[in-house]
Image (cartoon, rainbow, N blue to C red; front, side, top):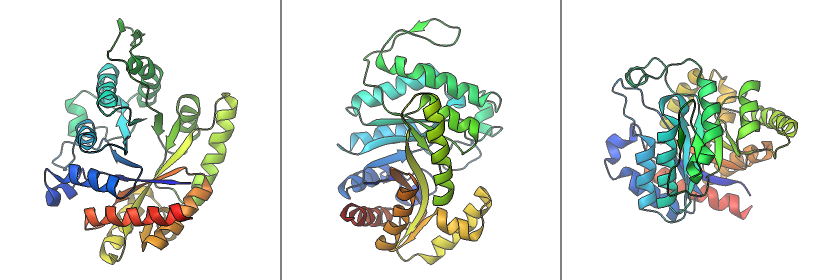
Length: 301
C-alpha cells in the first residue's frame, strides 16, 4: 500500500502561519494519519523566506510521536559531513528513531548563502558520494575516518536511518542511488517517466548486488477546489521542470480527495512506494486535512 506524507510549511507559507506553523502542521499531519513530514534545504540568502531543515524537523519531532521525519534533502555540498552526522544522530536519538535521511547535491550554487558558507558548485557528486560512505558509521557511533582527517567517533550512537538520495533520472545519479541508498527521492516526473527510471534503477541495483531502493516521489499538490492556486502551481512548474502543460497535469496532484487518490495510484503503479505532497494550495493547514482524506481513500483501496 502506497504511503503519503507532506512537506512542512518552511517557505512563504510561514508569513501567514507564523512561528507556530511548523508545529501545528506536524501535529495535524499526524492526526490526519499521514506517514511522514518533510523539510528540504532551500537556503538562498537573497531574502527568500526559507526555514532551515534540521531545526524545522527538530520542532516537528518535539510535538509528534509517530510520523517519520524526512530530510528531502540535505544538500551535501553545504554541510561538513561530520556536522551533518552529529545533527542527524542527535535528531534520531531525540525522536526515538524516526529520521529518514535524504541527501543530495542540489540547492543554489552561486547564491549568496552558498558563497557565504564557502560552498561551490564544483565536485557536488563527489561530496554526496563521500557523505553517503561515511554517514552510516558516524551516526552509528563507530570510529570513522572523514576525508584525510582523523577518525571521528560520535555518541550516543543510534540506529542508522534509512539513507535516501534525491536526484534526477540521469544514469550517474541513478547509479549513486543504486550503489549507496535505501531509497530514491525523485520529483517533477510523470508516472510514465517515473516507470522508465524505476526500471533502470532496478537494473543498476542488480549490477551492484543490492536490493532495489524504494521510491518516495515528491509531487506538488493543490487539493480541493482552489483553481487559482492550481493555475499558479502549473505555470510555475512548467518553467522549472520544462514540462508541457499535459505533462505538468500528470506530474502533479489536484482535485478532490478521490481524484487525488487516483493520481496517487498512478504513481504507485509506476513504482512509487510513497508519495510526498509539496503543498501549493492557499490554505496550508486545510490542505493537510485534505491529504488525510486522500490517504483514507488510498488505504481503503
